[in-house]
Length: 372
Image 1 (cartoon, rainbow, N blue to C red):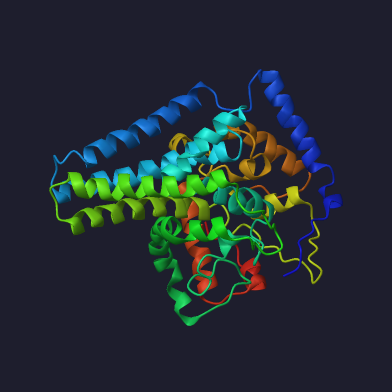
Image 2: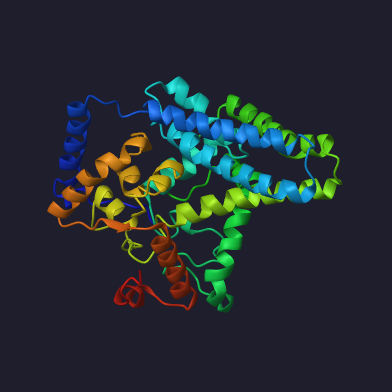
């Protein structure tokens, strides 16, 4: 696997111009790039909702079937807390304080992930090598079962992947919580992307402390407190995790695994014929940016173009800087991929999975217009 090298000369001043305009926006508005009052309100809303739902879950006031919708909502609020607070904090975007970002980033640990491993695989790898096969781990998920890029291997059963993919998304939180995060934490091999040093001793403590805390709070404590058979409580735990994984899987995939985006392939020496900033415009898509609900709950995942260009800016500001990005992209002749609605993006993701499952290659995908 060759080392990837972007051709920064092919930026043509796009990112420099865009960066200046975005900085001017914040100066003219007298705003910080970090969280504002509404962001703090959102954070308290999602945390309070998660705590309230957890309290109802372990109260022992409800039957199994009454607990099912509570488990679904608890899983959803766990996901919303992660993407709205932890995601920004790990990017250093929530606060100007590194200490506060570190504290709030531990939300991921509380939810069964690992902030240290996430930083490497997401912040460094995914944000640098977006949609590049064999480099972006987000499109290498279960390559023997799912084909997410045109360069990925094809197998006969994948002709049904547009249906079973969503079930696998639901399992993703369980897989990450019980296997993948351990693997990412201890791995020193991330291809040619990065060879991180061994984690600090404090991170070993965080890994095992928060893992134990997660299992106790969300699994063993409910088994102890609820007057239900253990297998029913375990079933409710699975429902919670499945809901969390399904939400995260769908919203993350709709930003990169849709018909409009590219999957650039470097040459034999690992060179790409465009700059990193241009690469983000080619490989990322927005959805439902004019929908207040999507902007409220998605934590900026529906404004991924802005997030990939400015991951150090709190997502609460992305709807305001999106017109600046779109205008600058148009001036420089660059694509600005977006889907007006959530359902439009979901349909495009479904169509893309279907085309890849049928074994279509790059040229066939490019020849077909996006069906939205």
